[in-house]
Length: 361
Image 1 (spheres, rainbow, N blue to C red):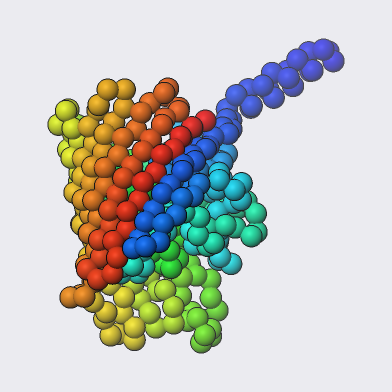
Image 2: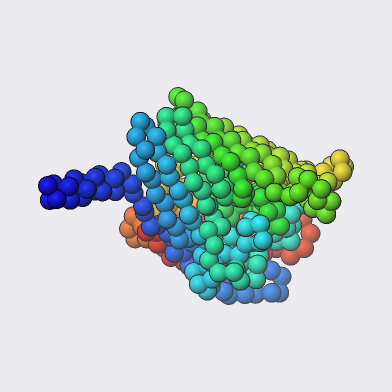
């Protein structure tokens, strides 16, 4: 009898474990980068030139009846120094490997290893930290996640908003100072299943300030976003919009559109974005970003080219041209290089070159 009970218990435990899965994953990406702005030259070792370096855990449990529970814990890592990527007290990323310009996309491009990219608090799951329920209805996520407004900038950028070739349009729309431009903490998100190629992502997030907070404002850090996508064979298009409060009496609204088409010999893509702040109802000039680019298979790798621009009003206008190549050593390991020139309307142009290796696991 005891042997039978032990066997049944072992079988039950095995069946329960079989319904769950946990995966360790990550990216280790390091490059040597050379930059020149005016008379200033710099050679440095950098991180995330092709893919953002990270360490993560993800898992799912089958709850039965088509319902699953899951979690995703993903930490940003600086592979050049071993430090975790920086976050602020609200766990909003202030650095993502490369800092691109300023709020209006001016001032050229800063590469290397800026101090804001080193996390003094050690490793944190600042890239994504969510728990979710999934089923035929789609997926509901709770926690820290990417914003709907960010996805178009990276999906339709040949360089994926990484490294020397990263989009100037994204630099203008999502400067390092914009705390919820890429990710938002305290969020509730919904991702729909595909309906004949159509998908929707909805998100709301909370700044968690007190109702009588007159310093930051009760709504600071709170907002909403949505993204609608359509994919059909070689065609992909997406539209996104978000509104949120960034400080006391300061509101931000952004809209962007992205598209790509795979011609076989090359994949062409583009992004257009508009972002605008308003302070006590007074609207600032819109920050506008554009990108046109392409990727094409070449030998054992992929060639990339992109032309992007960030502008605001009549005085800020920054152009960027970038070319690059990724050589695949295997399905998980690649060598890459990129060269870019960033030319603001006023001030010195910046030239950047990187050469690196990226390994995923």
